[in-house]
Picture 1: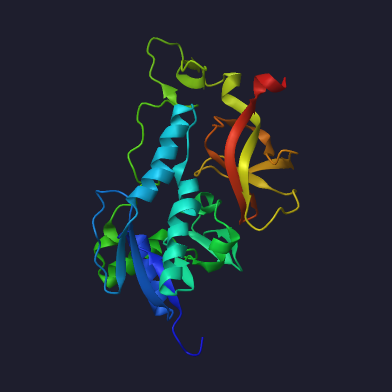
Picture 2: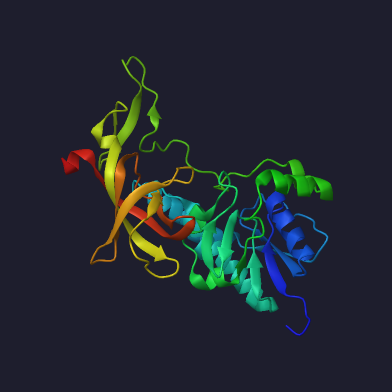
Length: 307
């Protein structure tokens, strides 16, 4: 680069993670340009000690994320907006802005690691966010930097406190950054029905919208297999052996077998029964700590269908 500093656009939320990510990049010799993407009208403009642009992307966010979220809810699904927001909105806009100002790299405060554009879990397993990044394209990942991937959250807060950052003690933000429906009962959620001999849970929904409930041992609550659509293979389709899967962010890795169907959908069959596999959520596949991709859960095959 002929001695010139490398230019990187950092997505700045104003929180502790993005602030420390920007600081670490500056320490590494990058020319840091911040981009605060305003997705919601209530967002405040943060102040930083380096150039930081503020751009209103509320229309893009509303059109591509919030509207899609409500459309999927209306179809009886339980969407995970972070999984499609990252590739289709957040990282796309970061790359577009980087192109505009001539920056070669983009960065965020996500807890994940990259090695030669291969997405890996963060060192801090309790904060690992590779699940939410499973939809990123190889081109996006080739430009991305995740400065916090090798750190634990407690170390990040210590750095922020040492720097005197206001965000040092700021609570972690929710994964979903906008108000979500609170009256939408999801599969596996406890149903507040009194007068029963045991706790009752949502075990399904009929086409007319009626909710079915049952006990925690109801066969309808457990699945052996699922079908996923629009699957994103981050670095191409690897050998389909020795894989594990997650069907929700906080879940531990589950042993599974994977098959690609003729129509492109991916069938995941688990070694153990899985509770509350929910259409609209995402299944993410791993080989060890390498995230190989993910897709939207389209259909579940529960116990009663496979007996």
